[in-house]
Length: 125
Image (cartoon, rainbow, N blue to C red; front, side, top):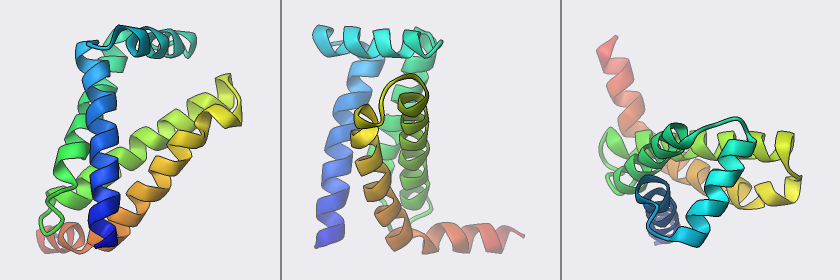
């Protein structure tokens, strides 16, 4: 039950965040995020790419009994680590708190659903 709640929260958050990065539909948030990316030396293409990684993770974490579930959690962990790094280097640690939370939650999801990924990796060798 708890894992479903965490998965739902992560999925909703990253569906929203990725849709803005990909489509730019919410102008105020989009402009703020684009300015942050540009201040980190990244461009709109990289922002869109991050959005697609987030979208992949937000959708695939629902497939916890398959290879895709833990892979999606890893994708969300990677984007969270990247965000934390950018905030620590270019901003303040306080701006990285949301990414620290998503890293923690996606780590919980990965740990709870890691078996299908590990099984597929070990069976491939």
